[in-house]
Length: 388
Image (tube, rainbow, N blue to C red; front, side, top):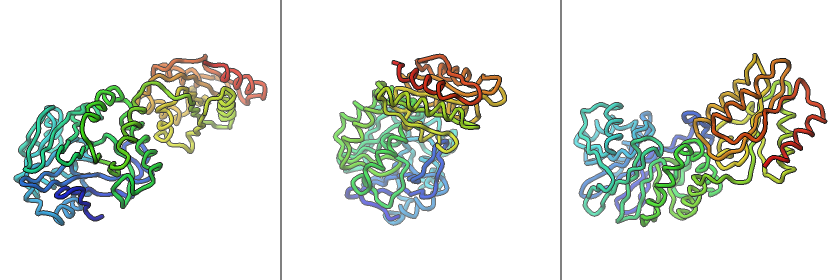
């Protein structure tokens, strides 16, 4: 992919990872990008790098514009290796560059990853760096989503280099939000937030007013397309994502061996439909947990079902519950259900995990032995329809 000049002297030089389909736990069905940005001024700055396997491609793109040896500053907004992985290769090509990173977490993290032989410039809130015509201002955003995270703002061009915020795992030959299908990009932005940033909603709430206080004409994230025509839309969406008030909708998640728990799940869906609550049904045999979490993000109701196998819940259900607990969704109402042959422990085990998620439990675990009758399924639907 060719370099893209965003403003005179400012270039997108990152790479597109067309074929990646898994990103530490969630599916990236539309690939990913690792965005990096080059500012050519009296001093030259490279903002972020890329995953290590793409280092040569990054440097090739930089060479289309300048000799990498001329880079004065390498701004590392985030230590995670999809952003910082190419730092050793860049520093080999630009041995005189100074690495700009957050203090103290960015400095500590980079030294742990890449050693202390480089020259570092730790920065904190309110610090800035003059490149000549352009200024870089640094805004710490700790725990969005690592302690070291920060964003970089160029006031002269009104560009926010937003790091993980407002990103999407989305590969495209186009670079801007108005050049691609907006519905696809917004869906990927929501999935990204649900699977990466959801645990840090409180920090995001504090960060959004700071971002809104900046005069922004372009948001340049570390993943996906850049926002120039729909800046208000993505900020509004983020406000909605981090608002702890859920939407009136339900998510029903299950796995089943011989369709008995599946029949119960469908009865639960029918109960929510009777109640007038929009509902999604997910079968863990075919649906990935990261796609499910996109709907869990704003759902009010969560129902999880598993049959009993070897005195336990099914491993797929345990995996989903572990993943969901780590992402810490807030203000959910939940209950467990499941079929069993003789032991019947699964529904209680699922219920315990829902309690560990700090959800409000709507009813005792619902258990049905062997094959559910039509009467028992109707009773389950009616019970769900009656919950508050």
